[in-house]
Length: 129
Image (tube, rainbow, N blue to C red; front, side, top):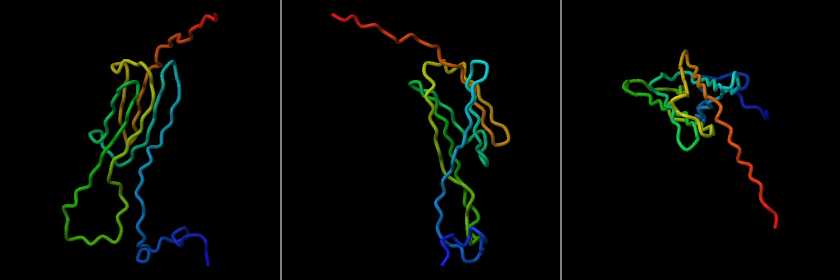
């Protein structure tokens, strides 16, 4: 008996009817350049109109929703793997003016540029009595 699933070596078209969990990972890279944070996220298969970026209470939220229309009712699908659903990622960005945040979506890649939040001196000295 093999401990590896059969599809690891061969994707048997007719015998692989196991339900698979559809999970969309919004993998991203974040790097700092010239005082700005750059968030680069791959979102293949989505259009610009599917993606929403919001800022609220110091959090940048990137979300997307894609619903697949099933207009062709004559097809009997053996397997459906193309993604349909929603996802969301949140990043704490602090006190940044939303008008200073820039974003572009091209070829399935979202780029969001966020200026660093102004540094505040929150350090307080407490007098010892």
